[in-house]
Length: 515
Image (cartoon, rainbow, N blue to C red; front, side, top):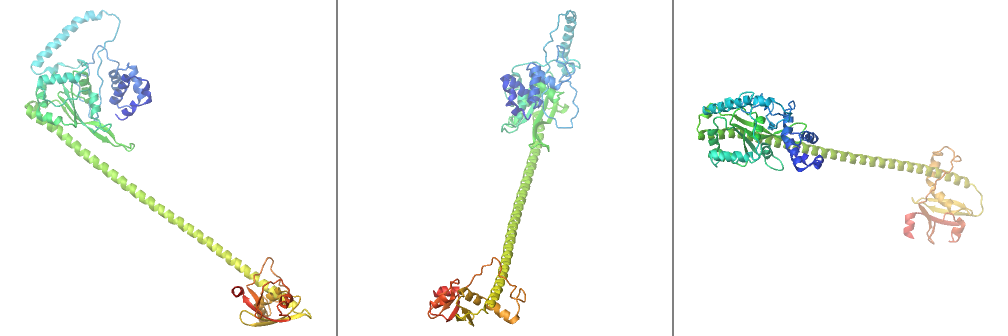
């Protein structure tokens, strides 16, 4: 029946009346179909008669019934259906219609009606006689079937009959049709599922009197009066009772069926499918039960109904436990998956941090290597520049000039150097002389340069700018000489230090502190 609730709100039903929607809902609920368009087409073809549509659904190879009743399907003497390999689910069988087929005028009925009247009288008298000796059910032979009667209030009619016959004390009968009882027992719209008990009554069968008194017994009334039961009682002579008899395959009466809801799980379904299945059936009373008194039969009925209920409850508890175990297993799997994902994320984060750290180390190493290369290149250019300046000073040392100055220089290491400079020299020459003292010592000791044995082949590197880290200072008076582009004579004569002077080589930081 799943899908019928959603079908009510289907846009296909918007153009139908309330009665037509009710017919569609009832047809889908009974046939367990979800094809709304097909249901509407069948109902339209049957002029919105649910019973005719159900007849066409359950008996697709038969024509619409005529005035001659079907002689092969009496509920009293139907052959027992073959055993099903699947659990028996509840459905509804169609009710044969007694509407006559309109035909043209014929003389045949006028000729045959006396014979039909005699035949019916014989059947009626035989039925009465056999009923007196308890064999009334034998008169319904194959080939003869009486059509069920229609009534607007079948449940009310049966309830009034039962109370007139057996008294007002009885279990609460469901006030509705068989289809409505099926719907009431199903778990839907938040309702708890209920157990459906179907009792089929035949006034023409034996042992109905003792069964009726047993049904009205206090034990049965108390047991079936519990809120978890839906008790539906139908007379097989009425339309709804006949439908239930056809659906449940009743062959003897009284007939009892207990239906419980069971969940069917399929790998393709996200949610289990809930169905009403017959858990117990009583097809007529056994010889032992026929000899019981009403009290014993009532206790037997309660025991027969209680046993499958207990089995169903145990199965339901087992199903709930399995579902809990499945949910717990899913929860554990989800937790494991979350833990795995968290661990994977941590590993990814560690890998990312390691990659970034390796990238930083690589960049730092490249920067350090580049810095070392730059320093080596700068040191090499500085060394080349020092040798080129030394070579230039060696060449200029031989120049003759009458206006000279003798400078006594105290170097940073405390040693002294004396050199004669001309009046045309700049302070730059003095700075270069001081800067090349280490190179001069290497030349004096080895007699060769890192760039070859000759000083003449050494040239100053292109693009190199030398930075001096010292200044020249005179003690008395104290003067700092740091303008290397100034003429040497002008710088010294202005301080009274020409043509002879003593200068001290001071590092830049010491000179700055002295100033």
